[in-house]
Image 1 (tube, each protein chain N blue to C red):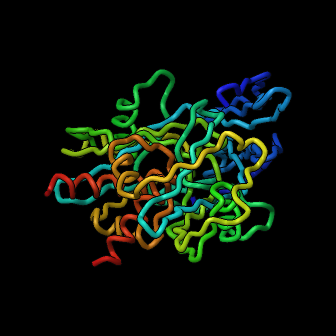
Image 2: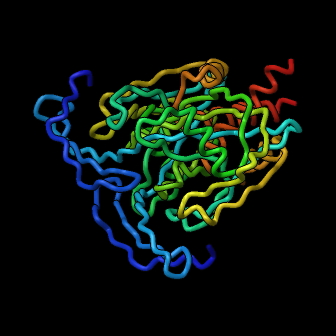
Length: 183
Length: 183
């Protein structure tokens, strides 16, 4: 596999958020396979933890699933945008809060089998309501903010009631970090 | 948003694993936006936990990221395949093990902003080496099995050394489940 060679790479679609690329890859001499790859700019997600232990989540309509989903705030990187700057921007835009501190929780591959998306997940603390309030993107007008105790969100994840991958990862890593520092 | 209406839906690409669909969606009267949606058949992932507390992981080359990634075994659903049957099939194919018990850990949306993929994650216990061994798909020939203590894998996740979303979710949920039942 160290020998895996890309013979041909063709961009079949260039979209606003994603590109679709089909590659001919030679896994071993003479053995050529087509690979379907979704190219995504990457994004940042934020676990906003209030001083009282509550977490700020957002609920929004997700077109691919055609349902409302409860998630931590997140968004894609603008061209050349630093992941931390994107986290700060998205937190303010989606929740109307700014944070005093950001700590990296992890870097996550959402679905590495067919997509190169990389998500940077941060814990944000020292939260303050911004005087500017929310500033939702076009097409995010359905978004509502929900504030819940971290322990409640963890229980929802344990019961399988919270299904967004970055939310599961971010919340469980936050819970582990708080436990580790309280010992 | 309850009024969000799909005006037009066009499949621009029909692939082996994914389809690309572009929809015109009316969020509010007269306000029409294009939505890029990747359609995926969904999949199953398995956390295979040996009786001694070790976990069976697989490392494979992932073309979108152009690196080898350590993950729990997983694969996409075949047409009309039951998620549990897919979990059983993938565990055997990728690791050569069969399991005595399967417990659902969660159902996960890998990246709900642009893709409808749903992943069913199971904890598999009562593991036995199958006499048939591994049975890798074409294009999975790079896959190698790595057996590590669950506690080691959890530490790797805490340190940000394990970045696959289904692996982070599956391993942390397994760790929580074991802790809850040991109390």
